Length: 299
Length: 320
Image 1 (cartoon, rainbow over the protein chains, first blue to last red):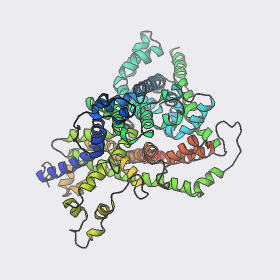
Image 2 (cartoon, rainbow over the protein chains, first blue to last red):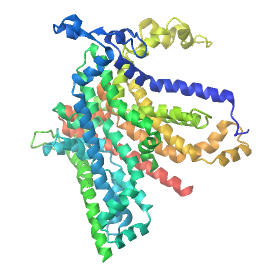
Image 3 (cartoon, one colour):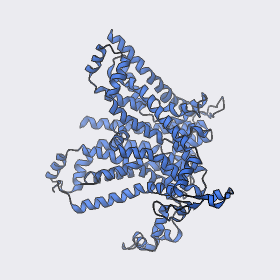
Image 4 (cartoon, rainbow over the protein chains, first blue to last red):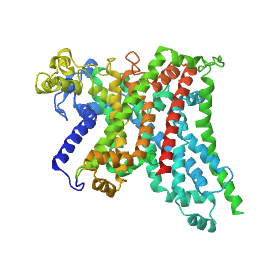
């Protein structure tokens, strides 16, 4: 009857269930990091616990190349991570990932911020019409129209370029919607005062509204960067040729595709390198990240 | 003077976004709609008008029916299960005295990780020889684990015929290679990835419910926790649920990464979901007309789902 007290058995049962769930959730992360540290033999026989024994092993491939055996002993962790960067241009993929996600975010803000300001604070004929269009466009997921976008880009010869990776995401109707709602809460007096000081509308957007919007913009940045760092579908569609433009997930898939059994260690090392940056950032700023990722839940 | 000046600014601020909305979001829908009536392929300057033939194929050919079926099944499994798990986790975590944040963090990890990378890791974990899953299951054979999970201790159950006992005899499944298990395995990875997101939304919903309301219900005779949940918590979570259902449905409808990396639509098209079909038909086989037709069907379904959500949210707002 009393809702204010807790039962200890109930509490224990909840912990037991939640711990079981947590184990299943963590399982693949455990496998990923553990395998990235082990030698091929240890992976095959499940020896060595989480960290593996870290004893040097004989690299058979190196022996096959005709090197003396003494030169072919490798430390498992160093071998896996070394090969992750050597066998495929992983560094290049990571760099591409950074270039693409940063460009997308910057362009999204450049386009969305003035538009959101105009929709929230300026009066002009057709404003409601434009806002209606924004609401309608929220219904169209970009992944769903990937094919016609691909056809259009192919017809202007833009496939296999950075531009192709970035262009479909330059317009974020969700960003416009979000920033408009935020700007609605900014007092008009602030803007009027800026106008009195002789500031142009352009200046108001970037010198008054942008600083106001930093918290909302941070959340949007996380939303945008996580989505595009992890995106696999669009790069898969639009990059058909050169590996030079591959983003991290595409690079990992390429690695998996050309795999022989002995490469599980390096493959898991590659996956770790791709997944860990966001996970670490998440652990450091959890509240911000959860806010950002669930942004779309606050409509 | 100021008015005219701000009006001009308004137009110039809206213009870039407006142009991009047309070129990137609206024109492609029209392009897909037009091409879906043709047999267009890249590299050809002309295409034949097929009228409704592509659409006819989608609804009559068996491979496309399998596609619709696989997508529907995936959504119908992932949505309810990931929502039920998300809600259960949120309720449990919300009522904990300590440790709540730790569980929240752990359950949210899969949401942050690149699905493609984690799909590849799951493939390794489910691998028949080096995988940790089958190895652990095999380790349980012959001991108390097998006795327990063969359910022989429940009266009337034949332990020999149970899944666990027969798998111990004949070997555990190839999770991604067998017709019986492939879609379920892909669903499992989808649920694993999605439920933490739903949990966080439900946690936000739960903190919005005033404690007094639950206490008042208890005073009025809602004695069991279940009654209080049914009468207060669940109705109060209504708006959250509407949102969670739609966003999970739309996202799981767009599943691609796991299918492309792990099963490529197989075995025998049991995991041939729509996004993969679009990719395979259009990008790999250059059948742009057919791909466009699937795109249009896909868009229609997504739009109906979102419109339905908006309608339900608005209706709720009006009478609360």
